Structure formats: C-alpha cells, structure tokens
Picture (cartoon, rainbow over the protein chains, first blue to last red):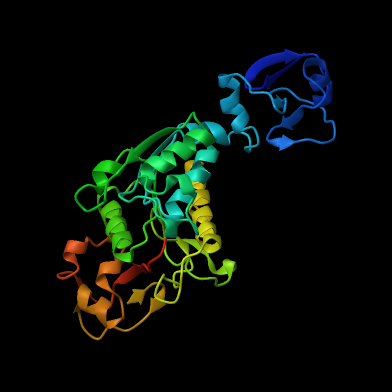
Length: 268
Length: 64
C-alpha cells in the first residue's frame, strides 16, 4: 500500500499508477495532477505523492476547493503562501495586477491599500472592469479576489499613505510591495520602510512606462531588503503613457520576487 | 569614494543634499545608503560625506 495525498486528504491506496487510481475512484473525464504537473501519460505513483483528480464541471466540497485552486503549484509552495501576510501599497496598474497574482498564489492575508476610486483611464492597464467604475479600488479588488480565491483574508484599507500612517498600517506584513504611481510617494514609502521597518523586505518599482523592450525590465537588490523592479529610466510623462503590457511585466516581477522572498530565496 | 559601484574623487567634504543635487538627483525621489546604513531623509541636509564613503543612491521615476 502507498500513502499519498489525494485531493488534499491522506489516503492509502493499492493502485500502482495515477490513471489506475483515477479509473478506480473517478470518472474518465477527470484531470490528473501529480506533484503540481497535469499528466497526459500515465505515471507510477510513489509514497507521499500529492495527487489531485479533478472532475471538470463539478463543484468540489469547500475544503477540497481551496487545495484544488493551488493544485498546479510546485510542491511545498502552498503552505508558505498560506501563512504569509503581504501588503500592497497602491492598487493601480502595478498593485491591482500584483494583488491578482498573489491571490492566485494563495497568499493567506493581503493588505490592500489605496485612497482612490476606479475611473475609465484605469482600464487600459489596471485589473478592474466597467462595473467597478466609481468604486473604491480597495473594495473593487477585494470583490475580485473573493471570486478568484475565497479562502484569502483581504484587509481593504481606504487610506492615502504618508509618513504618519504607512508603518502603522504595514507593520505586520512579511513582505511589502510598493505600487505607487507618483515618484515622490515611492521614495517616501521606501525611506519610511527602510528606516522604521528595516527587517521587512520591500519590493518596489521604477520605470515601466511606454513600449520599450520588455527585456529592459528587471529586478535588482541595491540595498539590503530593498528590491526594485523596472527599467529604472522610463517614467510616465507627457508623451509617454502607461500601458498594460509593460506595467503587467513589472507587476509580475514584483509578485515573483515576493513569492521568492516568502520561500526564503533572497537573490533576485 | 564610491557611488553606485563607481569610484569617483571627492575633493572635499560635502553635505549629502548638495552632493545629490550636484549629481542630478531630486532629493524627494531618492533613498540613500552610506557605508551600509540607511540615511534618514531628515538628515539629508546635515549628513556630511567624504572621499572614503561608499554611497548607494536609489532614485525613482513615476508610473504604476
């Protein structure tokens, strides 16, 4: 007998292969995921394998749904995400996309901070829909995350961050993502965190406007616990806009760096 | 002294805020580390740097 995890539950099985297990307990149309990989050819199963067999079109019980959402994660990533608190300062082009990405990762607690409401010029790059126009960004984002992964605790904070409140709001975060638009606000937050929360890694951004090459956007670590994503040069200005592709690339850099830090990887 | 990994020569001691301005930085858009320590913004106007210092200046452009 093998001891495996099947749809999140410790299970003893006499089956030797993944498809044998599927055919014994589930319908033929089910997909099979072995240790984070959806297989199309049968494979031998081993002790301690993490196996999901998901019947398409069937809503699983709540306790299985949470684990199924993250069934395609690399093994052992999910627990570290589930126990983490990440703060996202600003929910514009960067922050809204970082929030969606980290929600899909299953981060246990997201603290989402923005003072503003959704307006039409946000829709070219920010993760909002027509029905969010006029809503507070922090509330619109919370409602989206509830539809992506309802097991995430979301704290929506409708505040303008300043020297007076930033550290107070962000003090319990394992990681902070800076996702402001205004460069003075970026520098304010970076200085506050480096000075007053020096042990909290901060993943910030600089330079993702326009349609320069995607490959110029990178992640650097110039100062301990400070990570900067972007090309470092291309700011938003008259004649150079902010558009979905490069903003999303930069947000992807920030989200992945946050994930790496939560996995105790400090290299960019 | 070294700034952002480059060696330059500093003839005499200078206030950090003056050094930043002379090198084209906007002091409202930077964070500065000197010899491994963060310099609080409140000290930009008083902090003195000399030719032995190792400085890291991080500056930000807008957009997000």
